[in-house]
Length: 254
Image 1 (spheres, helix red, strand yellow):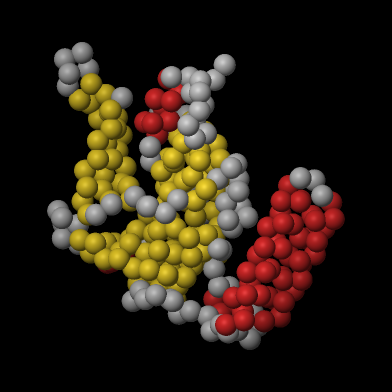
Image 2: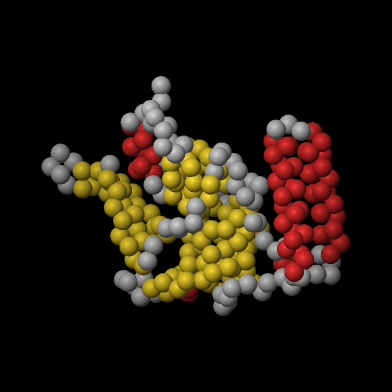
């Protein structure tokens, strides 16, 4: 198997994977768009699962920041395939996540006070401790999480009668559709880069988004985005999650 990449803008393009026949002629097996991120997310509970139809892989992050199990399309599947052939276990060390979107919109930010961020951070740390305890079988932690969800639902039901939904919900990260690596997200824009496709001359937006305390990049064609993006505003849309994995160096499997 061989893999080639055709850049169409800085850090993004088309990946083509295929094989050569006995006469040395290259035959394309599949291709996909990619955007490369240079900000890794460390993982100690990551794994890979091979897709059924071809030699591609889905990455799984059990310790994703948002508290859910994140499934993403592995961009460097060829590297994982080569490790497999050498009988080396592919253990993810960190993942460089990106989300590709074909439709999205810009929402205004929620008005917040300076102390709100500190309270939110403390709440997040406590929630993550409870998640870890619940996964380990702590029944008290599970009951606490259940009670917290019920109280939150009650508060939302009361406020939704007088307030707009997106003035209550600051960010979301939820699976959507039938594909396990597609998600509906709502997150705060913390950085924006505009890139030009060298072939079509269309503007591509590279948005750095903070969503449920996870930070990753989102790529979208400017014409597919409704509204004007700005730092502090929020991006809402569906994304196809990709990840390029840096593997842990180790010896062969027995």
